[in-house]
Length: 318
Image 1 (cartoon, helix red, strand yellow):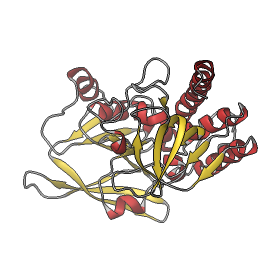
Image 2: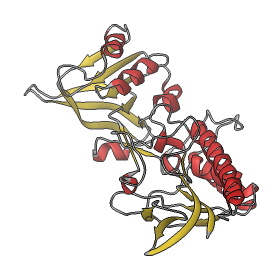
Image 3: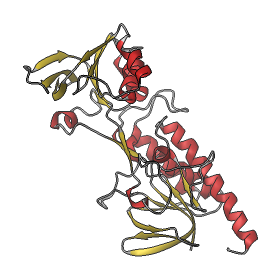
Image 4: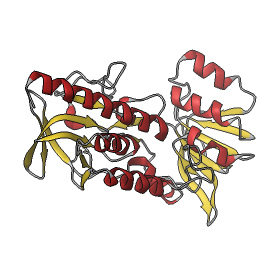
């Protein structure tokens, strides 16, 4: 039986692995996490599609997302973590020990740390994929500084879109909110803040039909109308998609408590509703969604798991 199984290998999962391994807990990291279709997630999470990370402490010259993930993995392996490129197909948290099904077989563990992250929702355009990380982003806090002095587009109509647009005004000369309806679904205070900002304009009843660009990156967008108006083209240097995130918790439904949005409910630490199951990173954090906050939660989850393992020994379970 394992002492710690970590599901997910982004900054939360790998930081948890570093701390658990240094505590001689020999954690097993399932790098594939899980998806509703059962397919493997990208090991390393969203950092693997991030070219430049300039806000992670310790890298004054910046670092690429894949390089940061590789350094974290190497650091955890140095202390004895084991890594398996596999997906968690099913879980059974009904009793002790906890069980995780991998490649058709049940693994047993005293504790489980869920660090499967959340995936940004995208528009699904071929041009969007073509310019990913070359002018297309889903995180203003992460990438806004790269667009200083440019005109930008933010797609969406909820609170997240309002927050992204308002934040980007620190760098952009102009931000255009593109929304497919004639009113925002955002809260009134957030919508008013955006609508009354002198750097923000709105294109109502519009959708991004195509992202335009050249070999250097995004140069514009073609907007179609949802009410029969002619297409319209905007010259912009970047596109931020803010239509929400989907936490990777489908396999957990019915096994631990989740919010209606699918995010894992944790207490002020990292404990979930099931003793021995902890959650860290974007899978339990719909607010910050940063690599550094995910790493911090990974540290917390490993320490929480270590403390519980001590309790289990006192109780005679280990």
